[in-house]
Structures are given as structure tokens and as C-alpha cells.
Figure 1: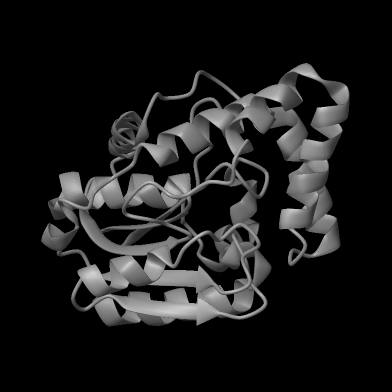
Figure 2: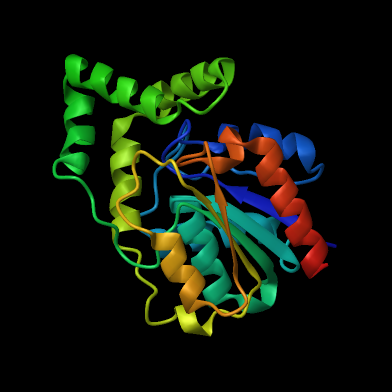
Amino acid sequence: MTQVVFIHGPGAGGCADSYVYQLEHYPGSLAPHLPGHLDGAPCSNVERYTDWLRGWLHAQGHDHDLVLSGFTLGACIAMQYALDYPEEVKGLALMTIAMRPKQRRPGDLQFRLDAAENDETHDKWLGMMDGIMHFIEPDLRGRLLQRHREVGPVAQYQDLVAIDHFDVRDRIHSLKTPLLLVQGVDDPLATGNYEEEIHRAVPGSKLIKMKAAGHFPMVEKPDEFNGALDAFLAEID
């Protein structure tokens, strides 16, 4: 039986609350808070997060027929999982992912560290998080912004560093797991067409580009995203 697992990233609240629409739409699906996000210590890199996720799933008896869906860090973890343990993964539905280090705007990382030390910079960081989520329904955006306050900018800094060290260009051609890529075409943080690169590198993959969606399509256009995932699940079942 297919087990759908949603894996969050550093944005949209920095925790699993960003998958509220998916957890409602897919009964029995799972969305863990990663270590260091609301509780515990963070992992040092994508590989360690992958090991943690695999152990968490195996402890609950989920070791096969996994469909992993994630954005940013969560998408990197899902990709790593499928490359390392292909026999356990039935499908991947990934958003806002690159197979190589992304280009970042100068000062992006230091800004998060400064936000942890200075109240004015912290307020600017929260304002940035709010602006990035402008496609999200206002009430939910407010709740996710509160989660950002709780998770904090240092956790986001650590997540971005982990993402920046993720590089599977030498392995991407070995990926055999069915792959759905979803790209928000109005992403204010986009610095490259990274999903297109993966799509070209993985034969048989499917790329969907969503308008009026940015960094977090699953929560910005939930009906459209869920419909695309429904179709993908039907294809691989």
C-alpha cells in the first residue's frame, strides 16, 4: 500500500504545518517535523536528514512503497532517499529543488545569523518571510509566520547551508524512481531554472509549471497541486 510522506523545508513556517492541505486531502499521509525545527537538534547535512527520516519511517513500519514529496530541503532529502534506497521509494513529487548548489544573493546567509542577534534585523527577516508567502491565504500565512518565530532564523540558516552542499549531478542519471517536478513560475526567490535541469537529466520525468505560485506550490495552489499529485499517484499505482 502506498505511503505518502511530505517533507518540509526552511520556508512556509519551517515545519510540517505547511502541508495542512495535503494532510487533509490524503488520509493516512505523514509529515514529520524535521529535527531542529520546533524540537531537537538539526542534522548537519542532507544525508543525515535522510538517515533520520528513514529511521523515523522504519520505526513506524514504513519501509516500502513510499511516495516522497518535498520542497527545498525536503525535496533534497526525498531525492537523496530515492538515490540511496531506490527499492523503498515508489515515487517522488518534488518542488523548488536543484540537483546542484543554487546561486544565492549576496548576504542571504549572514542575514539569517544577524536576525538572531538583532531585533530590527529579526523584524526585517519576518517581513521577508511574510512577503515570500504572499500567495498563501492570509489566515494560514499568519499561522506559518508564527511558526517562523518559533523555529527561528538560525534553523533556517542551517537549512540553507545544507541545501547549498547538496549536489547529485554525478548520480542524477541513475535515478529510476518515477519523478514529478512542480515549479512555481512566479517564485520571487528563483535564481535559476533548476527544475528544468533535473527534468532534462531524468528521462520520463514530468514537469508542471504553476502560475500564481512561487516557492511553495503545495500551499499556494493546493487544489492544483493536489490534483497533479492525484494524477501522478494514479499513474504509478
